[in-house]
Image (cartoon, rainbow, N blue to C red):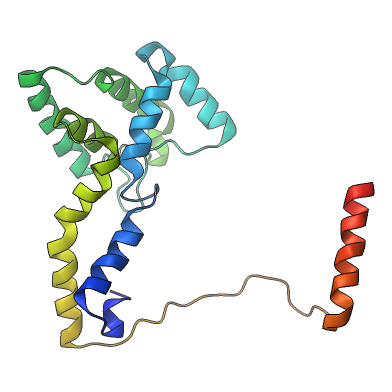
Length: 196
């Protein structure tokens, strides 16, 4: 919507949307879930993996959502579709690990509203359909393109340019240092780091 509000063409809008989708915290998250499940390896390793994540305060990929404080309804649908697919063509080797991980996270973090999101089961479904991991995000993008273009067209109707607000959080009231003195101060700081 931000890109559309500049009145650029639909190609720019889709390219911008792909850029925001592609990162590992959005459309690429299902790839990260597969990597996590491979790292866990077996149902027996789930608890120790979760312990390590909680101790290190690291992200548990495929869990949590800004809106849903229950299991993401899309995750429920994808899990059901996965199970139907597995009945016909055999289970994905990491499905039992995923189910065990969901249970362990629900037991420990459910009270905080941490449950599977749409990314948690989508990668397993894509894999069973024969889609290579590096194509998960493009498939996700293809499915969203019609919606992106609908938003673009809607934006054109009563356009008002989006100006994202930013709030400065840095230091205030800092003394001005003339440019010619800055390098010598940087050199002194570097010497202190190296010798300290």
